[in-house]
Every structure is written in structure tokens, then in C-alpha cells.
Amino acid sequence: MTQKLVTIGDETMCVGHWAKRYGKSANGVNRYWNDHPNLTLLQVLQRAKWERKTYRIGNRMMTVKQMSLECGLKVATINSRIKRGIRGKKLLEAPPYLYITAWGIRKPIQEWCKEKKILASTVRYRMDDLNMTPEQALSAPVVKQPKVWMITAWDITQSADAWAREKKKSKGCIRHRIKVLNMSPEEALSAPRLRRKGSEKEMIKCPSNP
Image (cartoon, rainbow, N blue to C red; front, side, top):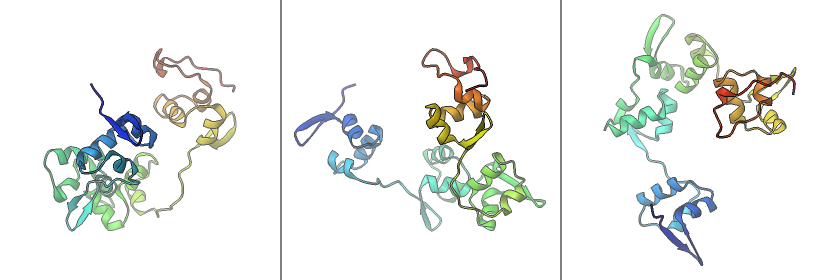
């Protein structure tokens, strides 16, 4: 596939290289440029923040991300509904699995969240990750504080960022090993990383000492 060459100043490069130079996604640049053909590539690259498409929900204009946070549906689910031509409040309707029974009453998560003035994503996080009951998830006060993932290994407790710096591993790799592969913190932090020669599921477990 031939890439389009664009000249800016005295340099000529493909769009992908220009996007990399400006710290942007090549796909994002191409998509935005296709939607705004009246702009030059330089104007597209210099935009600090690209406008996100909004949809009318009642009397409000909302992005897909805002809809996801409010109703608890995944972004992919809302985008799928949009592609099928669904618009308006039907975009936010909860499927059966997003109904919650609390205090003996069963109704959609959006109605509970509107009544309790809390985000649906917060309620789902509390129930799925913190194992709270529906009543606790809906009534517990919202404390705004940075989420710091603490890991205890070899009787030392510190943040995942600190462990990642100390062991020279990415935090994503550590999280995948602990959350997905069910490795112990010591194994996740000390096991070598296998590159292109097999999955981490085949990794030989290391001793529990650093």
C-alpha cells in the first residue's frame, strides 16, 4: 500500500512519520484529516485537542465516553449501537445484565445512579472489583483520591510504579501476570520476560527470592 507523501517546509515524509514527530496516532491523524479535508496536514497536527463527535441524548450533547460513564455500558457496546442506527435515549438503555436489585427493588443501573447521584462506572467497579453489595456500592460516599495499586512482595509493600522502576518491568506486564496469569507478586516481579518465543503461560516459575 502506497503511503501519501506530504511536504511541510523543506521536508517530505509520509503521514505516519509526521504523526510520530508530533506525538500523535497515524490512524487518528488520517481519520481527522479525512473528516476535515479543508485543513492542511500541518493544521491537523498542530491541533492541541481534536473535537470528539457528540450525540444528542435528550437535551444534552454527549460523547461516547460520557455516555459510557453515565450508564455503565462499555464504549464498544455504545459504538455498536450507533453503527446499527440507534440514537437518542435508546443508546443508554440497560440490557438485562445491567439491572441491580437493592433494598428489595430491581431496576436499571441508570435509574439507581440517577437517584443516588453516582456514576454507573463507579457502581460497577465497586461491585465487580471491590466485591461490595449493591446497597454498599450505591450508598458509599465517593472519595476522590488517586488510585494507587500497592503490591506486597518479599514482605515489602510499595506502589506498582515503584516496583516497575526497581525491577525494570512495565506496570502493564506486572498487572497481566498477577491479574490474568495468577502469578504471585514475587514471581511476577522476578520472572524473565519471554519475547516472541512463547506466551507467558509457558513461563517457568522462578524461585520466590529476588
